[in-house]
Image (cartoon, rainbow, N blue to C red):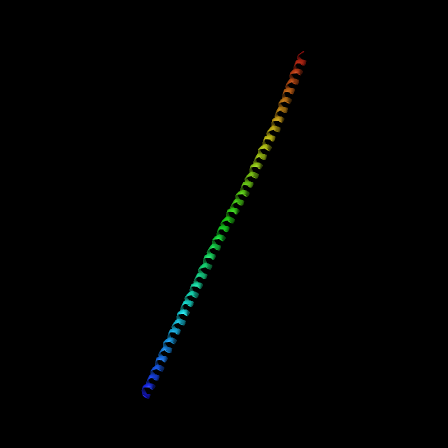
Length: 135
C-alpha cells in the first residue's frame, strides 16, 4: 500500500510536472505569437509611414513643378510684353521719321513755290522792262 501511495505521489508529481511544462510551452508560444504580431504591426507601421512620406514627397514635388511651370509662363508673358513694348517704340520712331520726311518735303515744296514765284516775278519784270523799252 505504501508503494502504491509513493507511486501515486510520483505519478501525481509527474502529471503536475507535465502540466507545468505544457503550461510553460503554451505561455512561451503565446508570448512568441504576441511578439510576432507586434513585429508585423511594427513593420506595417514603418511601411505605411514610408509610403505616406513618399506620397507626400511626390505631391510636394508635383506642386513645385506646377509652380515652376507657372513661373516660366509668367516669364514668357513678361518677355512678350517687353517685345511688344520694343515694337511699339520702333513703330513710333518710324512714324516720327515719316513725319520728319513729310516736313522736309513740305519745306522743299515751299522753297519750290517761292522759287516759282521769284521766276514769275523776274519774268514779269523782264516783260515790263521790254514793254517799257518798246514804248
